[in-house]
Length: 415
Image (cartoon, rainbow, N blue to C red; front, side):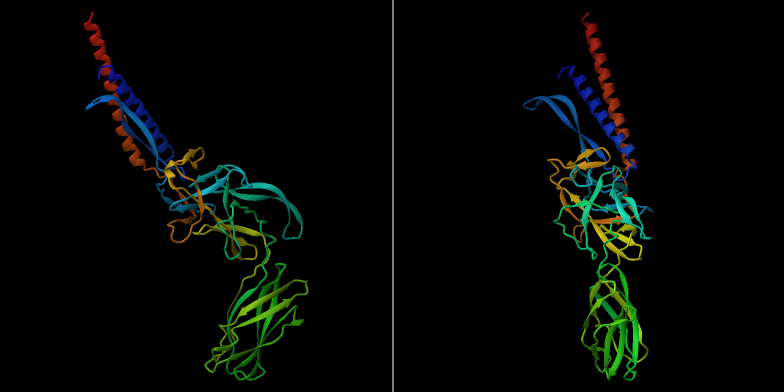
């Protein structure tokens, strides 16, 4: 290699170290950016010509590598719209509320809400008012994607994802009639025939209204009681059902009782009661617990996340229920994703297609509510790389200057 080759090698070295310094600067600048994924610059040798074992060294070539698969530290947050991901996967975003826009991936779960279209709703006073829909979005205003769930949290993963509407009136008309209930109590074994006890319960009708009913327990014979329900302010009584107990106080039969309620409002409910936990022991009439699966139509006061990625609605009637399930996007080679402005990523031919999934047991990924994923940049490591890069750049510059001085000296020798 001639002396002039020293210019090429040193120049490429300075250019490569400049690119490495730019990568370091970008990492340091985003060291406190939530969900940021750092990069690093690595080098490979350039050979301009090689014959047998003799090579003409041309210099060095830089290549940037993204560290997208590296987990950032999760830190706690007091903000209820913050949620982090522990494990693989990304939040799925779409630039349009109807899902027709571009799809993006992100690890930044610091979400906000954005207003949508105007809607007409009925407030708590019965007045019709105009308000706006609200959707869950990321910091760029892109719509977070997920699935609708039923009141038990069940959903269809194969269905298309959609934007998540989270304004207070999004579910105001979605009451659930009571269909199943569980009752546990004790009736006194020492009671005489004819003794009666009552227990007030609340069920929800087909219109989503809360209705009050009274369960009547009347002893009719040894180890035998009648069960009925009175409702419509005591005006209606359901058919009587007989309950028998074993001599040890445990329930003999039946273990369930079905009651049909026809309310004066015109709404109805048919409830299957699980009464397997009713006992007949000596002592007092002791109600233990009553639960049912209905809920009233009510406006949502707030919502929260859980570790499975479910969005839990908190309603004005003090009830809670699942509303949505957050979607996760995974790719086979996350480090090959295309970086976009706003701390976003898009799939590439090298990364593979996005697989839409969800956090579930066994896949090593779960959500972390009230958390933020910090940048995966190690600031101390970046400063160490900065010192090494600066020294390498200065050395290459010294080589360039020395070669220049040598060529000047060679020129002067010919004079």
